Structures are given as C-alpha cells and as structure tokens.
Image (spheres, one colour):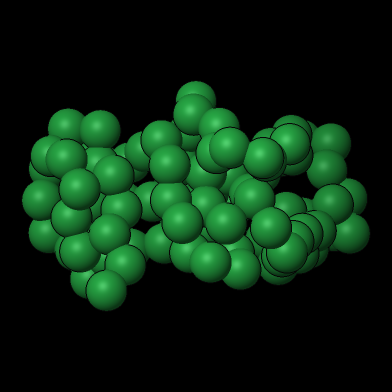
Length: 87
C-alpha cells in the first residue's frame, strides 16, 4: 500500500488522491504557438528517480498540494523535504 503525506490530513492511502502530474508553467494565451500549447498539455519529463508532483486529496480535505516522489520506489515526501542520499 502506498501512503501519501497530505499536509492537512496526515498520511493517507493513495486511493484517496488523484494525481495531477508534474507542475508546468502555462504559456501566455495571447502569444503561445500551437507547439507551445501541445508541449504544455501533453509532454512531461517522466523522469526516473525523484520528481515533484501535484496531487489532489479528493476523498479528504479537497486541497491541491505538491510532494516529492521517487518514481522507482514510490517513496513520497512533502515538497520541501529531501530523502537521505537524494539530490
């Protein structure tokens, strides 16, 4: 079972959350090209190792928050914390 650390509710089962993906900067609607919109909407790094992600606690406090997650081991930490031995 994977547990995620909700900043407001504490550790909860991952089934209570929805994954919103890696944070991305939204392009300016007035000046963005179609290629920039495609990149924003569809392309993510999908990196192996530690990454920052946005999650939504849909079955709890109904808030968005960010956390750091190791995509190999599924270890999750609050966004500001670092795991031992991680960059």
